[in-house]
Picture (cartoon, protein in one colour):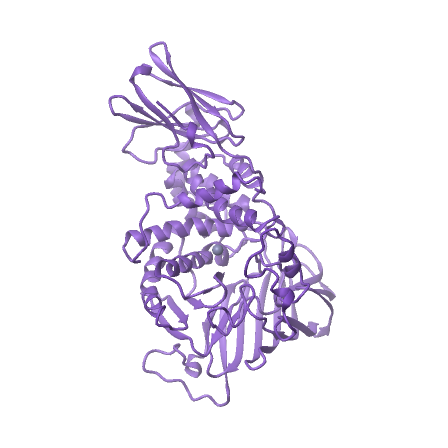
Length: 618
Ligand SMILES: [Zn+2]
């Protein structure tokens, strides 16, 4: 690396706090939902009305709009059913179950009347997508009001939502209402629901749910009428007004979110914890002999987790979060999660932390998960390992052990994928991966490695800064893969496009080796070799026979800079750039080869080198 570029880089890092980065200025649509739901727990059906104020903030004139009707996926012959039966490795929860549903077990959303500013509209239901032809085009920078009536039936629990889940929760109401499809700078995203990922329009939800008064509801948003409801929402000692009829009407408001979830059961135990910062944590579960101790211990652990997460990943912006037993594993929603609840304590904490972290990477950042599942699942997984390790270090969870490297399993998952012959680029649309195996390991493991390996490339101080700047710059927007890498370029002063292009858009792998350690005049020549196709900067640790160690960083020429020292305990220096086209590199040491004990590439094991056998030499 040249001296001037090093100086420029140091200058840019020193100036960081004084600079303000340009704010994200991408336009986005807005949706304000008002819904009233009349729920019949005997028939597992509901009638709904929806008033939607839709803001077209785009520069485009819209002649059609689309809604998601997710419940229609749970019908024999649906896209989800067919896809599941044709995947080589179907999700065991789906399999062929949809194909066997009887009429009273399927899910549906039937749209009756739909109007635009009072004028009735033509619409066509095609599976899980409602296609709507507009009466009048929606002009740029204008708004319209859509009103509709609909009938719904809650399917038997198959995937994520439904009735009567495996642990006996009556209603897991996720993806349950007609939801406007997002239109953004990449156009409409009217993807049929086949069980994978989600994307939604930012907006406000005002939801009234009338249901049998014995039922307890947990969900997104803030309950507006606790004095009529009770059920754990009133302060200790206060009792609700007596209900007038057989039903209670629950009124929720959820501002600035892109979805709304709820779950209901007459036997929920509802506890809560109010934090000093004003945030209320709610817990809903079906108490059993086996699970009650774990659910009683969970609030204290999640309270600690919130404090740590707010500091490292950015401040949680809402006043409520609900951990709700329901669903079929763990699934994230705004201000809430549905998780299965009969678990060991480490497992209950693990799923709670993971789904909570989605609030940062999906519910608040709101990337298009279908296109960038790794920015949600991967970054969430990256944070989950870190937070669990923090909680383990605090001895808060019996059975949870602190690890030196919490990412070993994550890397192992990626190596499994890379060696399988079935890897597809992470840029593949989630719905279109050829197997759940390739999708899952790409989105979760390779996505998490993206972030931990980036720490290796730019250094921990820069990555820590980048995590916060990314969140604060892009919250309540829809960042894409370029947006996150640009943040990391800004905090590091390094050019990182190559890292994104290789890691996201290709399946090329990383493999470096130490080829030779030879005498070279009075000094030593270390020959390093790039075996894999993906270029990377190298951390090389040289151990001398006198016991001294030295870390030598070899930047790539295309980074236009180098990582600063990450720790002060071992001497650190930056060697000349490795031009990325060169298959080999000669590193010169000033001492004779007889003084060198060993040379090792990537001693911190953060580079996803697929063959570590050639990484060190004596
Ligand atoms: Zn997840």
